[in-house]
Length: 433
Image (cartoon, rainbow, N blue to C red; front, side, top):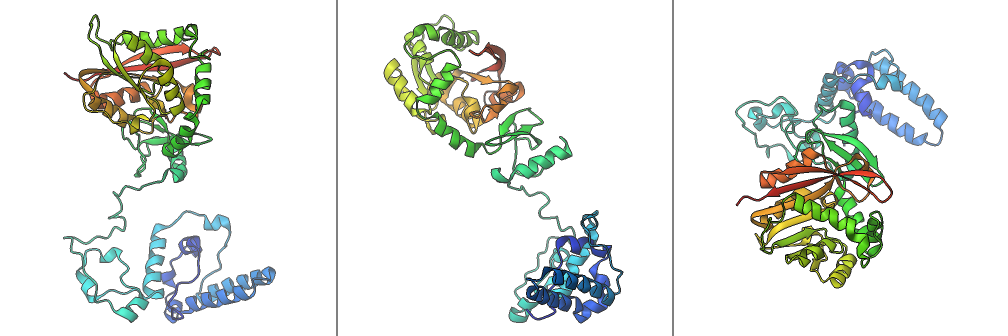
């Protein structure tokens, strides 16, 4: 690039705030290319004096004093406080146009005269024109002239990767709940973009939806891959059942309380046809070892379960003689209207996209089919590293209503083996006949 065709080496802050005056006021010096020449000289001197910081600092002070003298400016303080003062958008824009037109010699083709976006377009770089010309220009004719530089990006969706979303949620919290960022970060239940940061845990940020009060792990796809590894083997099952006072698959006495709670939920929510001898086709999502399926099978129903923990699925299938597919529900495929009943206990909070699975349930259920979900609904669950979602009554109802058009909620409380009181929701719905 020819000497004089480059902008002075200033930081973004200096270009916007320095002296509080636009560079365009330095008309005489700019026309002579003095600012660019000074910048070039400064760069060369700085390189030579890199090993002598004290001397270089003195030269730097002399450089700025000389620039101020030549450009007729009074030296301004160059402190952090000064450079971090209130931004001046008009000054920044004026400086940007000066750098494009005077320093980089941007220019327009004759064809640009009728272009609707000329006011927000720099044109062609001076070096490009000198080599290739500007006849390739094609004017845009939109019916009116566009002067707003944000015209084409104002309504774009900004995609924020999960791992980079922290700054957004932090900014949202600072600005309050009324701030609705125009980015592709939305509630997985109601699709609202009114999202705030409600906390962090070791494996990621937790966001909250203002509209439906749903909370969720932002980078849940990455976390799901980690959690899926935890599911493998019998150790996870042992820890989970230990909290319920269960340590053996064969000790029926240990399972009495567990099975009574499940059966009470099924019967109490009217999931099975009352007084009917008809055998129901039942799917349980996240059936673990299959104890509930074993109970229902003994009543004469046709049952099948899905369980992502392959070791537990295979173990339960052999020990209890119930059909269990050793796969996550997202990897399972059933024909439409394959089931009369779908049940799931404490599984949907582990799913990456629980709403999509409810949608599948709507397809798999026959006419008049019934759905029953038990979902944790307790703030104490927020630290549970296995959970990707933390439902509110509103978000649980919205998720099911979106598919079935109806949802019945029943609040439930239970006490863990260590005496901790917890809350959950039974969410039931029926498919139209």
